[in-house]
Length: 279
Image 1 (cartoon, one colour):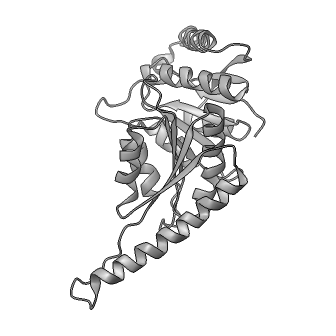
Image 2 (tube, rainbow, N blue to C red; image 1 turned 60 degrees about the vertical axis):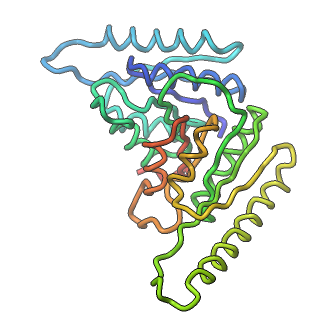
Image 3 (cartoon, rainbow, N blue to C red; image 1 turned 180 degrees about the horizontal axis):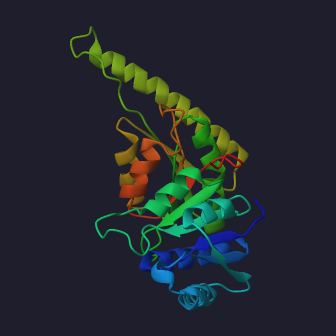
């Protein structure tokens, strides 16, 4: 996608961290950056435009401070924040948001705006929780063989390439519920996992062949995907997941795995949705 990286800001600490992350990503990938603030209607007829402009310019200044020779533009829009952000995603390379904006409940790790946008936007949505810490030189991508995971892989490869980082494709297989009294119960599960792992390795081998300039490793584990990806996030700079994997309900816009990883991962998470399918 040739569009800019768009970061939504609202003056909160997670939004500031998102602006810094987006600026660094624009720098690495040589893309323009657009800093966006949605000025919603204030209660009691109060004119909040001065505050909105100040919030926007402060975030843009922070972004410019960590980027060099990158075009940084600003845009102030009115309207419903979720609807505006989803609309912006259609022409953006990616959309970057803080995990929880102003007015969110302190106990939440992901606010309603981030969750709604991640479930309906077009293309990658990156959720950033905190300022960047130590770099690990590793990107993690969830792979379950679904169409959604296949759409997430190119973005993960691009991120790894831009960062000169390793890419780890994690396939997590959750054993089906089978009666423990079934004949050869343990052997059946071992054979099933072995077959699933072999198929997963073959998928990664094809990506590795097509992208020889990126170091791509693979891991197959027998556990639920959410804890597997959350565990991997502890030593990753970014976790990339599809919006809905195998086993998800057709009507769901955000699957249980991507939802769980968004809430529990300790590093930024990119949820990659198909282009042209925003709701």
